[in-house]
Amino acid sequence: MGTAMGLVPGVGGVVSQFICYGHAKQTSKRREEFGLGCVEGVIAPESGNNAKEEGSLFSALAFGLPSGASMVILLAALTVLGIRPGSEMITKHLGLFWTLVISLVLGNILASSICLLSARALARITFIKGAILVPIIIILVVLGAYGVANRIEDVYLAFAFGVLGCLMKAFDYSRVTFIIGFVLGDYVERYFLISVSSLGPGFILQSPIALIMLSLILLGLFGRSGKNLSQRFFRHLVSRDEEDQ
Image (cartoon, rainbow, N blue to C red):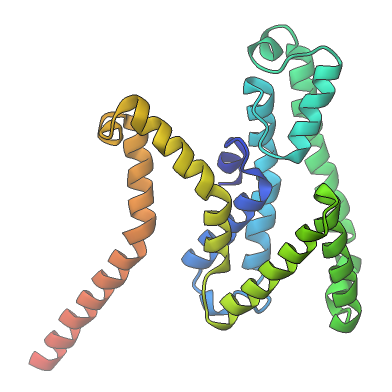
């Protein structure tokens, strides 16, 4: 899932993390433990975050379409060197292409080895008191928000979304779904209107790719509801049989 999201231009790793987390929570048998330290909720987004780099690299090199900040920097460096990403990258600079791929693989192996060896020491970070962590996190949030465009308004906006997140948590609204919709909503509306204006409103029923995507969306929306309904129906039949006996 992370690799597939990495192939989508402009999405980046944040969306892949949230989607993998949401999928893990939806399919887990311990859903009530998510948000309380369940290890599945840690493994899923981090695995998706690592997996998206492969898709991002392929999309950036083969099509010149970056899906995150790191790939934008990579494309800028290649452009400075006079190398144009796209079909020319695979035909004229195939050696460089495979060098980057192998470097990514070796980098993942090296990073995994370092993390496994230092896991015991890194795990102690979770025992640091909140009174120490919270001020540090707030400072990093302020610096990160201000450093994007050097505007104080971005800091206010970051705190506003923080308050919104607290309210959504208090009233049991899905923050993951909101973030995904907020990030991808503009892309979905823009390209849907482009498709309708160029291909007509019936393009969804004519394109095999569009039909597959529509089927996946419907499966994601109603798959769990249908499963719950079938389980209730089965329990109802079983209870009726027991009463008859």
